[in-house]
Image 1 (tube, rainbow, N blue to C red):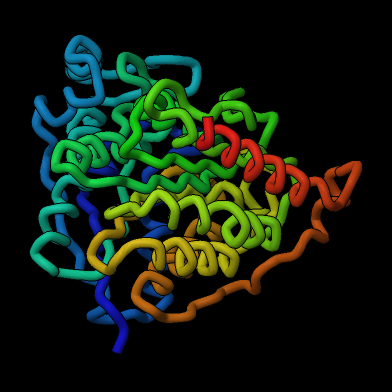
Image 2: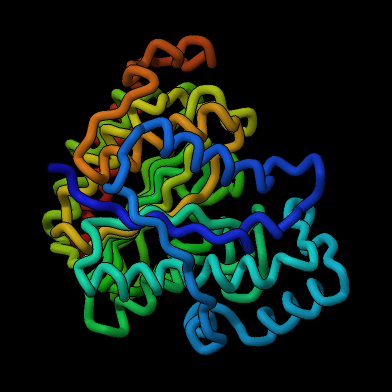
Amino acid sequence: MCMAVLLGFHPDFEDHEPGPDHPESPHRLTAVRRGIEAAHLGEAVIEFAPRYATHAEIGRVHNPGYAEALEEKCLQGGGYLDPDTEVSPGSFAAARRAAGAGLEAIERLDRNEAAAAFLAVRPPGHHAYDAHSMGFCLFNNLAITASELISRGDRVLIVDWDAHHGNGTQNCFYTEPNVLFISLHQYPFYPGTGSLDEVGEAEGRGCTINVPLPAGTAGDAYRLAFDELVVPAAEAFSPSWLLVSAGFDAHRSDPLCDLGLSSGDFADLARSVSLLVAPGRRIFFLEGGYNLSALAASAGATVAALVGEDFRPEPATTGAKANAFGSSRSDRPAQIIAEARAIHERSRSL
């Protein structure tokens, strides 16, 4: 019998309208739901409507003045917050509910309602800083959830496999010893952060791990990174909760990024990372992913993995795509992974 997974969704998320030609569109959620339905998981998927995060809960991560300015901007009809991020009248309600989705997931998982939660939320969150938006993101949904867990005395593993570095999340926990933040991302690339030498500071030194991968990197390199770096580092950290920034723009068909993964690879990653904490302590947050067919397939494969089913619209990938991007050495991802592991081990020993 497969395990159950909570699916967080609400119509408010579709009321965030960043513009007719914007890649972060409401159609993304339609694609996610279509992909999960295609996996035929039946009663193993338990849908719930997330609550709003309170102002105090948002304030654990974000400056109150920023939240107030964001609300006022939406009340006035919306507009651009930065060159990439536009809001509409419905965006503030969507952002508050996206920020509350992880908090409600904690409450439901604490009641043993499921083994994991997948939050089909938007706007996404991992680029958002304490006092400003960035990269389509308004509130940092995952960071707000992690802050709640830390306040309870939990140790939190954050894995961010979005193709873009989770700079907002990293910044939030850069000095925090009770969070292990691991990001695998395309590099050099937007937002320009996430180099190997970003390892955390003060008490959080050694609790940030970045794996900056070249364009064309395929799923076998990600599996190597999990086997050689992510799993050993997480086991040494001994987390009580897992939070995943599940962006699917590392898919080989994504129009904004240049990595080489498939939906089959995301199934492998979800299964591997879920084993690092006990059932009932796993929350996945939708981040990027802008090819709707690829997003549907990847979300379906990921949610199926969370309930113990093997749904693979595409097979897993190997490094064949690297040559198409002119990689000077086909073994470069493996070299980066080895260097990241060595840097992490040194930073933890200092």
